[in-house]
Image (cartoon, rainbow, N blue to C red):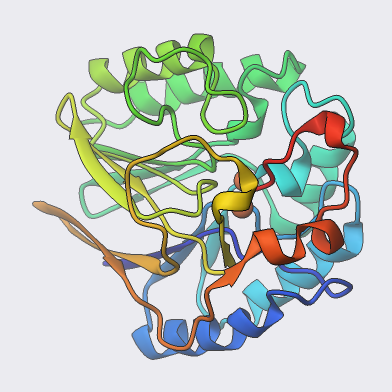
Length: 279
Ligand SMILES: [Fe+2]
Ligand SMILES: [Fe+2]
C-alpha cells in the first residue's frame, strides 16, 4: 500500500496567496496514484472562523479522485486555550460536516493507521477525554498490528521532556500521556505537520516524521524558535506492507516556496497580543 501524506495546504477561496501551489500538488498526487492520501491539517487558511474555507478545501480534496482522510489543524478548528479562536464544539462540528471525523483509524496490511485531533490536547473540552479513552481502546484493539499516528502538531521539538514550547508543540502534560502510550504499545510512526519543516528522527524505536507544508515556508520574520529539520515544501510517501513501513520526504514539482512573512498581514491579520507565529 502506498500512502501520501500532505500537510498545511492553507486553502481559501477568498485568500488565494498560496492557491498556486494546489494545482501542482494535485497533479503530482494524480500521477503518483496512491491508495490513500492523509492530510495532517491546516487544510484551510481560516476554517476555524470561515466555513467557506472548509467547504472549498473539502471540495478540492474530493477532486483529487483519491480516497483521503484528514485531521484538523489549528487554522481549521481553533487552538486549545486560544484567547480569540479556541477549539470548541461548534468549530469541531463544522469540521466534521465537511471532512468527517476528526479522529479515525483504519487497518491495512499489518498496520493500524490512526488519525488524532491534536487541537483537543490540553483544551479541557469534554471531547478531549472522549478522544483519550477512544485512543486507549484503539491501541488495545490493534491486535498485534504496528500502529502509526497522524496528527497536526508534533509531540515535541527537540526533546520529549522539554518544557512548554507554546505554539509549536503539544503541551507537556498531554505529551507525557501520549509518549507513555506510544512507548507501551511500541508505536512505529508519529507523523505530524504544523511546523512547515521537513524532518525525521527516531526516539524510543519510533519514527517521528515532520511532513513539510505544501503552501508556504516560515521565514525569519516569524520569530520561530530554532528548530531542527529543513525549511522546504513537499510531501511524504509511505510504502507499507506486512513487514515494512518506509517513509520518504519528497519534492513536489512546481511548488513555489512562498514565504508567510511576506503576506502575513493580509492572510492572518490578528491583534499582536496573540503573538506573531501563525503556521
Ligand atoms: Fe498549524
Ligand atoms: Fe500550517
